[in-house]
Image (cartoon, rainbow, N blue to C red; front, top):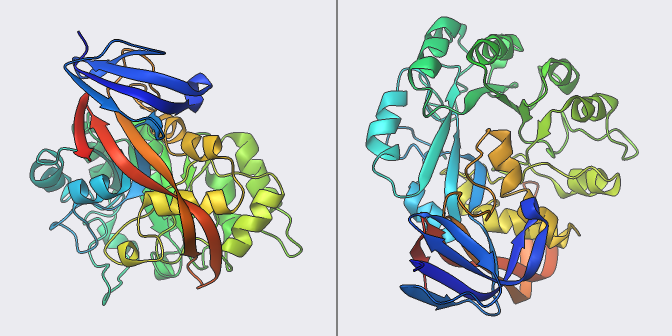
Length: 376
């Protein structure tokens, strides 16, 4: 007998090419079966009129709550945005990763996996009032210490994170990225690179990224934008995609602009991953949460199935997780139940530009580990 059955929803699972009215059954913490007219389980929920998707994955969050100044509460955030897996984008470094594990990750219900920051202290001084880049002082960066920490916590760490730019690395320039790349290579992990205002310049960063590495904030506005004057995608950006670099939105407080997004999408350049970059500053706007960021791409004309792909199977593959991102039987029993609400909505980018919309995505429920975790 199934433990839980979601009946009558529109199931969208891009990894399996599924978009159809189906039931989804769960047993023993995993997806048990996907099909029409399945028998009821110990618990059966009618989700007719709703959209059922694999558990949403936010590839760029900051949820080291209480251990870093930028962290938000993971369970609270996950419930508000329909998330089953949160990937923390380098909040913790080698010096405080163990605290992140014990005090937040192990105590949270939602699944959390971190990128390890190349900086010993992680992102230690970002808030509404203070912003000190963790890569400005190279004495805070020790590649050997970072590599040892990544190996010691290999069951947890999904990649290495570096932030470069005039804000994050200051006079250190590209050096932190070079250090982080060496650690990622020796650890056999992907590198996620944050790039803010120059220096370094986009043209310095892009050629260094390897297949499987992640450029976050990939639709950032000028400067260091991926769009050339006239609207074409920069040649180094196209070359990176051809090489297999993964492009992640990482909306945040200052890293997503409609002008850039429209130009990129017009050229057929969709992001591989849509993520929020949620933290204490961006959670009050303009990012708010992953569902808001996803809704912005619907307004921009990206098909719903592609928006779901960019928040399920694509982020799972980006961090090499083979047990989630799809509702294939035998994998983790994680699912998100969504509504496509109709109304009048306004969505704002980081520069204050507004788009008006008649629909948005909203969370109606979450299945975590085969049980109904949150929702009506």
